[in-house]
Image 1 (tube, rainbow, N blue to C red):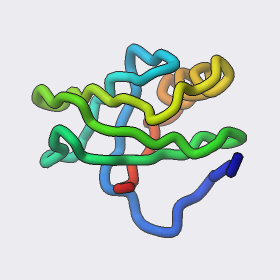
Image 2 (image 1 turned 120 degrees about the vertical axis):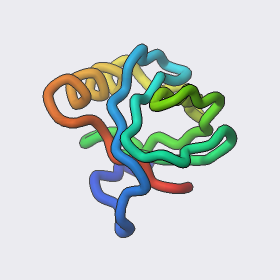
Image 3 (image 1 turned 60 degrees about the vertical axis):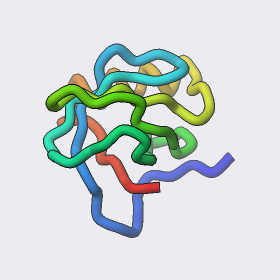
Image 4 (image 1 turned 180 degrees about the vertical axis):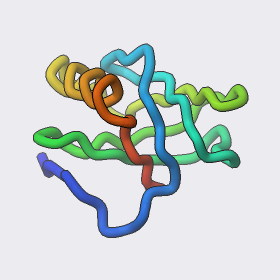
Length: 93
């Protein structure tokens, strides 16, 4: 399992996660132009990179399905990061 903390490319969008589960989440995104089917990845310090697919888009809300379920620890890290910091940065996969 590869643990990623930084990407080499600039982020496509910034997002704050809501309604986080092992299988996916809802993102509130600042970037317009996110479309259904788009692939993204993001990093959480101390956890493997998370990759997935946009399932739906309604205004600034995005339904995001993870490729692989994430652990409870990763879910907690995501909640904490999106509560304390300005969310996660999404990268095109």
